[in-house]
Image (cartoon, rainbow, N blue to C red):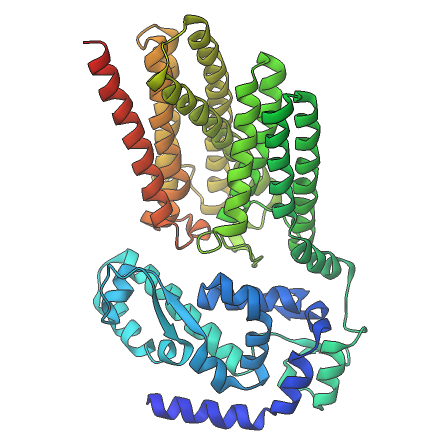
Amino acid sequence: MKYFIFLVVVIVSWFSGPAFALQVCGEAKIGKAAVYANGRIKPFVVHALDRMMFVTDDKKEVSKNGVKNYCQLSFGDKTRVLQEIKVKIYHNEIKKVLGFDHLSKNVYLTIYEFLNQREAFINLARRTDDKRLVTILDVYLEKMATLEKILDGQDFKILIDNQWVYPLESPTLDQVVTYLTGKNNNQSMHVTFEYYNLLCRPFLISMVVLLIAVVVFGVGKNYRMVILISFISLLVQLLSMIVRGWVSKRIPLSNMYETVMLAGFVANILGILFYYRWKEKLVLISGLFLNIFTLFMLEFFTGMLDASINPLMPVLKNNFWLGVHVFTVMVAYAAFAFSWLISNFFICRDLYKERNLDTTNRFLHIISDALNIGVVFLSAGILTGGMWADFAWGRFWGWDPKEVWSLIVLLVYMIILHGRYTNWINQTKFIFLTAPAFLTVMMAWFGVNYVLATGLHSYGFSQGGTLFFFLFVSAQLMLSVFHLVKSHFSFR
């Protein structure tokens, strides 16, 4: 069977015309051409990079040759790409199926080898009762289906004679070449904006600007200048979010990538507002650090945060509920993240410095304010989520994993706040509890999506973030336990 597939690919690639492929794929201007794919019009380069990143999970190779490889797979020398470009396998269960040691750090298969595993994956999906494994297998089967569409030239359409057609369905190859490489190729304003948004990498620029703000903070202690630089970065991020919403024709809050994008943005704003409220430099730098970290994730954690813009599920096609519900929840998570970082600053400081009552009280009030904001917004988020669920699914509450963990987060923080206001939890314990309490947020936000991957909130599920989640949880638990042990022996 595998030799038959290889023979078919060779024959198709021969008749698709290597000269045509070189003529098109070698053009630098091809990336600007507008194509129709996944239910929307977008630049060819955006579609090509998204597809190759989804299939291979190899950012280095995609950044270097993604468009060229996609072009060759679509209508060029397919055999070279099939035998040279590799698909990254990172799920332990899949490594075992393929006969690799699950402890192997990196496992790669050529596209040709990967496609030959379809039957094995389908058989395993039928045999197993492990829902998580089935979800993982579905992702790999979807990658295979995507590759087959690319190989068949059925992955995107171009506009020929006012009709969207697949490139190989065009009357003449010259029309395809003219469209993909010429100036008159349906470059609407939103396509042009999306192209340059990809080219300029606004989130990387924003991160660099914020790093400059950190340097200014450390060297000159000029807080007004730090805030001014932060506002420049926030403006760039806001413009990028607006462009993303304009291109997708929806509020950009429908997946993990977009929620991380908003959370860092809000955390930075909270840092500035809290600085004016408390005149404490730590809150200003906390907002900067959180925003820098989220921007770093957006740029470099591409295996777990997919930046591609895809059509929404029917249940999400309501901009009002999507905006209100997800926005309120993410403001809450940003406030909790803010309190988490400040609490950890206090824990680290407590490890090597004696406690100061004035400093403790200051930290206490700052963290309390952050938790109050988080609890209010999360309550609103759960309420609006229930109203949206009633509108979309016909029930207010269904004990879905995402719903349950959001409620757990709310209850944990309400208990901590209640203990603080009733003196059931003293000042220092309140501060120390705030840091590990954020692990409930991580479970609701990342754990449900990456670890559990079950429930009605399947549109938010992603892949590749399990390691990040467990490393984060482990690091926080080790810090909290180490501080607890050290404090216990210090006060004996």
